[in-house]
Length: 122
Image (cartoon, rainbow, N blue to C red; front, side, top):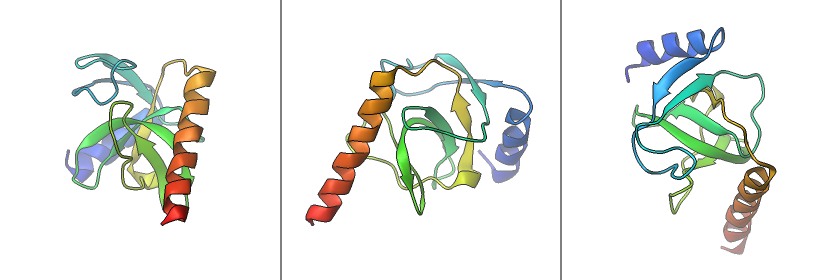
């Protein structure tokens, strides 16, 4: 997605939810390939939320937020082995409007803790 179109879409999500279609299997079973989701920008995002963001390659992805780092948000697809590069605030389109269970929030924070422990162990 080109930067201008992404910025326009980002501005719209601040006012009203936008419907997007999910492509891929990285968020299965929470989001199936082809599912339509509502995305809305928020002031705050929390571990366990599914963020929609622009990747460094210019694609748009929907992955679960694990936590924060100085460099940005830490995200990872539920079906992915490794976490993504830090996501800057300006690259976030919004969060998928779906109920997030407490166990998904706890699981996200535990996943971030594992990443931190692995880095400290190096």
